[in-house]
Length: 434
Image 1 (cartoon, one colour):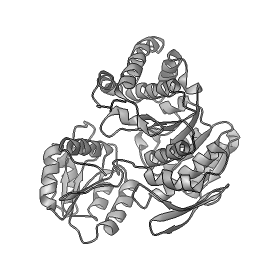
Image 2 (tube, one colour):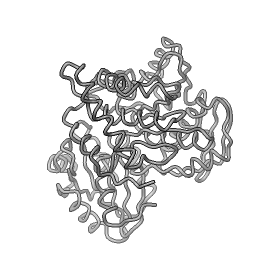
Image 3 (cartoon, helix red, strand yellow):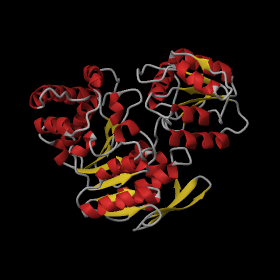
Image 4 (spheres, helix red, strand yellow):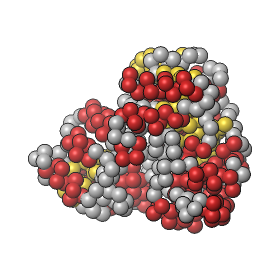
C-alpha cells in the first residue's frame, strides 16, 4: 500500500471549497450522499461530539473495536497536515490511489447534486465527509466512528443515524454558530441523541446533564452518564482503572499524554462497549489503548530543545494545558509559540497562557482566520509582557527554538492549524516523531 503523500488533485479541490464556508443545514450532504448511493446506510455508526477530546476519544474507540475483530472506519476533523489523516480503516489511513478515486467520484457527484440545491454550494466539510462515507462503504466496514466537526444538529456527519453516540464534554466554544450560552451549545450537541440510540455522556454540569436527559427522554434513547453508569475508579502511577455497566478494566496505560485523557478513555471504553454489547477482553483493552497515538495532542517531540505540540484551541483546552505544563516541565524554560483564530476567546486564552511562561511568540501561520500577531501582542502587553511578533510560522519556530536553547521547551499551541503547520515543518526538517 502506498503511503499517502498528502498532495493530490482531490486535496486541491477540497482547498478550493473553503470559500463556501459553513452551512447550517443538512441539505447539501443529503443531496450529495443520494448521488453516492447513501453510503452512510451501509454500516453502523458511532458519532462523537463534544467541545474537547473528540479526536482522542474517537481514536480510542476505533482501536478498541479493531482489537476485538470489528472492521472499523474512522473519520476525524480537522486534519493536521493532510486530508488523508481524516479517513482510515482499522488504524490505517486511506492510501493515495483510493483517496483520488473516491475524490473523483465525489467531485463528479457534487456537480450533479448542486443542481438540486438552488444555488447552494457543497461545502468543503460536506465533500470530505461524503468521501469518507463512500470509502467506508467500499471497504465494507462494520462500523464507522465519525467525529463531529461542530455541534451536532447541522453537522455533515449527522447524515448518518448513530447506533451509539458519545459526548465528551461541553464548554464554551463556537458560540458564533452554536449560540451565546452554554445551554445553547449543549442543545446543539444533544442532537446526536437520536431515536432509540445509546448515548454516552462524559463529565457534565447539572445544567448540561438536564438538557441531555430531556432530549434522551423525547427520543426514547438510552443515556449512560459519567459517574453513574461508568467511571474512572482510580489512577495509579501511569495506569487507570475503568468501570462500566458490564465490567471493570484495570491497569490501563494510555498511549496519549495529558491529565484529560483518562476521562476520554473512560468515555471511549463505555461507548465502544455499548456498541459491542458485551464486556471486552481486558488484556486487549490494555494493548489497544497503550498503542493509541493522537498527533498534536500533548505530543512531545524530543530534541534540543524539546518541542511540545498541543492543539488547545479554546479556553477550556488552554486551562487544562497550562495546568499540565506546570507539572510536566517544572523548572524548565518554556517558550510559547501561539496562534489563535478570530472566533476564539483570545483575551482570556492569552492571559491563561502567560501563567505558563512569559516568553511568548505570536504568529499567524497560513490560516486567514488567525488573529494578527500584533493583535495578540497587544493582549499580552495588557499583562505587562512584551511579546515577539513573527507572522511566518517557519521563522517563528526558528526564533522559538533559539530562545528556548538546548535544554528548554518550545510549546506550540492555540490552534490546531498552527500545530499542523509546525508539524509539517518539522517533518520537512527530517524530525522523527515518537
